[in-house]
Amino acid sequence: MIVCHCMAITDKDIRGAVDWMRAADPATIITPGKVYRALGKRADCGGCLSLFVDTMRACDTVGVPENLRGLRCAPTEGGMHERRSESRRVSE
Image 1: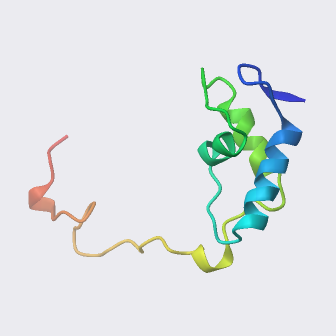
Image 2: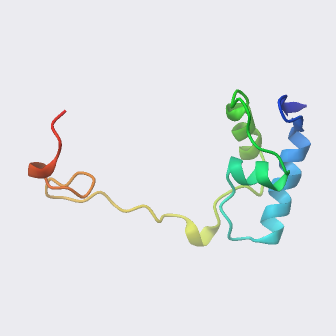
């Protein structure tokens, strides 16, 4: 199935690129941009991006490596928002 008509990228191309990247570097974070570059293409209109990402997510090997999971910072206490105190925030 063609996912990106502008660049003629199929779901098989995406799966192949994801599998190739995972085999080459098991710790890499796989993004749509990296898949485009692996295929020697670049995004054009962006209309396919939601289908492109859904196709990537359907790949068994696209997941985040185990050692990189859970790296997000826990929310802080004490009125901090985006690492700024309440008095330093820009009013909305």
